[in-house]
Image (cartoon, rainbow, N blue to C red; front, top):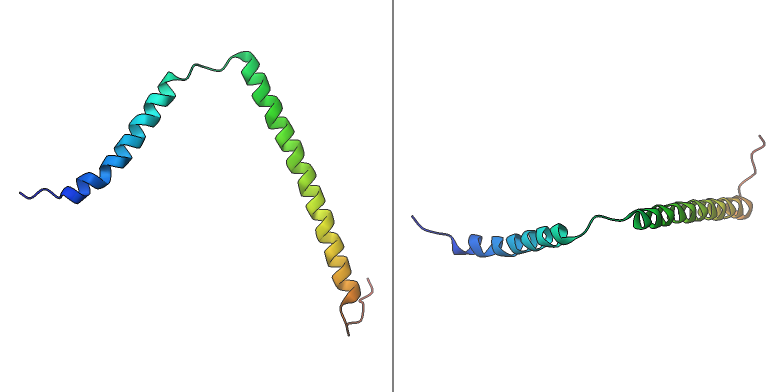
Length: 80
């Protein structure tokens, strides 16, 4: 029976990463109530910022579309 050394060496980095992640996670203490509150506050701030950015993007897209409609040469405007 022949052992494929390349396959063994290819799996070594994955095993090392998996082992180190497992050890690092095992040593972390559970979050305190203060840390949980800070995380929730940060999550709310991020959601508010994302909503604000989304609204700004929609506004900019509307302006670009309107400019395109106004400046498109040779096209008549359709009445609604």
